[in-house]
Image (cartoon, rainbow, N blue to C red; front, side, top):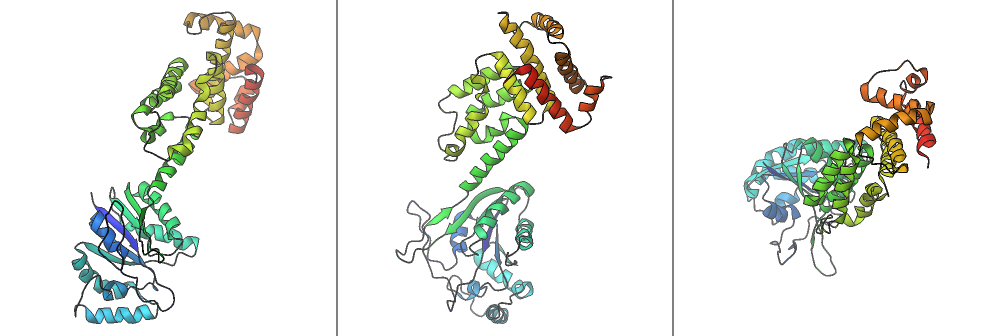
Length: 390
């Protein structure tokens, strides 16, 4: 797979005409050779197959060709002079940059593209930039994004662009880079902001779980220990609440259930623990009640109805000191509850059967509930209040 470096070119304020030559500190004693354009120092580390330099019509494009980073001599002199004039007028266009791509590519040693982008002042222009970046990235590529020399608002756009590339190009984001410079100390530390994507991954996983209740979405974030979460998800979604609880209990007892080398887990650990805490409740009936209400909140009406009905049966068996896992006893209690509770239990039972088997009963009350999501949700909420209690 290819590696692509997406970097930006800006413009210095006032009469400044060039970036200062700086030796950038990548950490652990790794300093770059002094360069005026940070993208070149970064390229030496990431070894991209393609370098894409993006800038506006007003960016100081001439800096790429007139600074001390590369010597061009008399090569492409006419095109460079034309670029110099256009830079002065803040009127650089794609056709002015086109004849200079090959000379620059030869010196970089990789394909180098020079791309005009909008100023990104409006939402439309910001979205346009994301499309431009995506056009220069192949599917499955590793991508590095450098925001050092662009507009101050580019880091926010770059973060969204990275997410966009992950989805539309299945890209692996290797880094979101910023090479800074402190004029007081002369230090130039390099920061990789790619860790922010880890936080986004957690946010997406929590959102997905809240939507459908599948613990397995946390597996890529938690490593080997999360296998127990995957097992719990399988058993919970196949109505085996006992096995699901065993898997969650095992996962919760593991000291390494949260990967210690991922600082993002500190932000989300409590949130995840709260979402799986139903297994700490005292008995099987309370487990099933909690799952019934949770699946109703997640709009999974089939599982909500199943767990609600099974919670009633389990509670009755526990009251009589019976074994909730005894299938024959559960069938017998189901028949008992039809008599003891009567119409309300029958309504939940019929609703459960209709949802599980996909048919509409002759019962008009249930048929009306199945015609509209709001009515179905309200019907289940009412039944749970009456039958499951607080």
